Image (cartoon, rainbow, N blue to C red; front, side, top):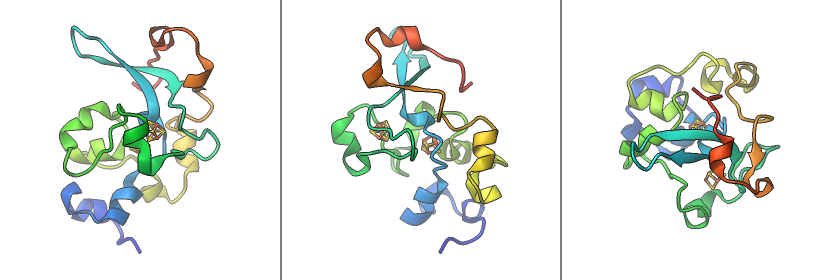
Length: 146
Ligand code: SF4
Ligand code: SF4
């Protein structure tokens, strides 16, 4: 049972595992493949989604083994929040780590997932699986998530 507005009463490092998992809105934005400029280290988004992302359910199909199957997949915990800059600007963990409130469309605020979809946050319908592309990721950059 989640305590109302727990994310406003505790820091990220104080959350229990149930609270930590509840913060994830399952938008899928962190599961799109990224391109890093090797000179500037700037990260660019693509509209290509990880092969383990289930497009219908919005869930990872290898959640418990994700670090082994996809070495680049950042398993965010309270211990590696310095990796948070990899996460999308709309990500609940990043927002809270930066001292910002959750967005009004977040399921913990509005009690449904529809507002997140209406706000254009979920990636469903906007991505193609990495198994479907044959050319370089550089040809699939997008600013959809800026
Ligand atoms: S971007 Fe953040 S909120 Fe969205 S699915 Fe990834 S971890 Fe969850
Ligand atoms: S392994 Fe799972 S959590 Fe990691 S990027 Fe792929 S779908 Fe997302």
